Image: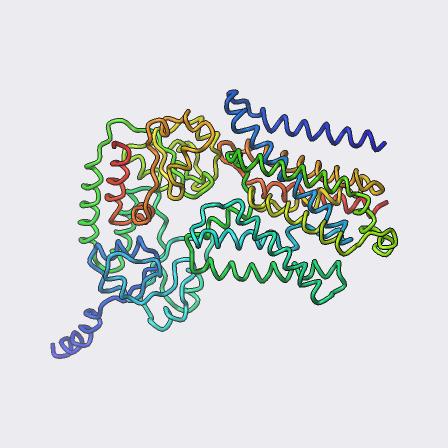
Amino acid sequence: MNKIKILLLILFCCLSFFFAVIFPPASLDILLNLRLSRAFQGFFTGFSLSLSAAVLQGVLKNPLADPFIIGVSGGAMLFLLIAKFLNISDIYFFPALGGLAASYFSYALAKRFSWASNSGILLAGIAVNAFITALITMFVIFRKDDLIYFFHFSFGNLSGVNHKEIFLFSVLAIVVFLFVFLRRKNFSAISFDEEKASTMGISSGKEKLLFFALASALASFSVGLSGLIGFAGLVAANAARMLFPFSTGLYLFSSSILGAMLILFADWIGRFSASPIEIPVGAITSFLGAPFFIWLLYKENKK
Amino acid sequence: MKKIIVCLLFLLPLKLQALKIAALMPSHAEIICSIGMCGDLIAVGSYCDWPKELESKPKAGDYFKPDLEKLYSLKPDLVFLPVSLNSTAASDLKKIGLKVIEIEPEKNIGDICFTAKKIASYAGRDREAEKFCLKLNLEISKFKPKKRKKIFYEIDSGFWTAGGESFLSDVLSKAGGRNIFEARKENYFKVSWETVIKENPDIIISNYSKPEYFYSLPLADKVSAVKNKKVFLLEKNHRDILVRPGPRIPRAVKKLSEMIDE
């Protein structure tokens, strides 16, 4: 049964990738130089956001966890603004650093005050995000020229034109996935029972920080490259848990693939439904993701 | 007879008292000054920076979010605002008892004249408005492009552009260009580099991105604007002139036509 599910997932993902590349038809050089890189950008953005969400949900044992809740989105926005302010031309790496810094800040806050550790991080994240949003608002009030730029950043952008960055990002996504996948035993140990994990000789604190750091780094780089694409990670991770409740490896894999599929599909719709106008991918992921999520919850409750 | 004279004496100060007006939109303020009413302005919007006389005027917020307290205390007879679907500015000002004149956003250069006439009609300055219109039309009619070149205009970073019914599109066409997305009715939307390549513009003008950015994009060498090095970044002062449907529009047309014909 699991095998069929996985095969179907992979098949659907390949199909969305294929459609995203070849429809609507265009000349070969456009397909190769623009569409393919855009599809890779979409694939790895979705892949990373949902892998990150899946890891965070496991580590924090909370189905509400998502990279955007722990401060990644706010931190990236803030650093993007600082980059504009200081005229730093690099707008990919710098925002990613911001996401990382903000999520680490949430973690450190929760740890420092030793709040009931798992939901504590989420609460700290919410506070950090709120504070950063306030900072951003104040900045933007005095730099109105940048306002529209932030508005655009906040619903994502898959342009597919930054070949080098897309390539580096793909490598990072694959490396992080492999790392987490190979360490899935530790991951499942701390995500089920921390006490038991410590009797197995796993230092749950260290392990947790490691997974937390990887997840937020991956999400931060994805935001740096593609902007904020909401809801994809949350939906994918929850759907994956329902599909494969008993296998950590399959949970991680299917979450990543589902997220990639959702973003590829959403970008495809956004690109050709009102052509030549593009509907930003973030708007569509939420538009499709939210009803799907409600349906998932409904189905889960009925069981 | 005496009574009539006394009455007239009472009425005189009323007639002589100047109109007190507030204009929160930069283009409205520019038009108001061009029809000789700069002195009547008692408050302007925070973006209003031309002509120089406006710099010393009290700033009362902007057309999207006016400073209600300030306007209330200055008590203008008229407040000019653009018709806006997504701002409560006009209704807020009406609620505090001010007379608000809402002006339709200009869709083309010709509409600037309507705005001027509308504003003038409230101040009995119809003649000045006529003169203003004649001068504007004369200056614009000097531009007679022979051949219209295809233009991609990036308003905001990430390939955001304007459609055919936008003011920008009209200015481009007066300057001898043709907006490659003029078939779309929407005012402001995002496209992709892919569609830009397909439309193959002769000229690319951006408010935001440097020419080097466009040169570095994949398949840039397929686009004739890049091949002929006709990619421009518009400086801020020109950008301001271009987006304000006011008396300086001929300058914007001139600047654009220089870029197009260069």
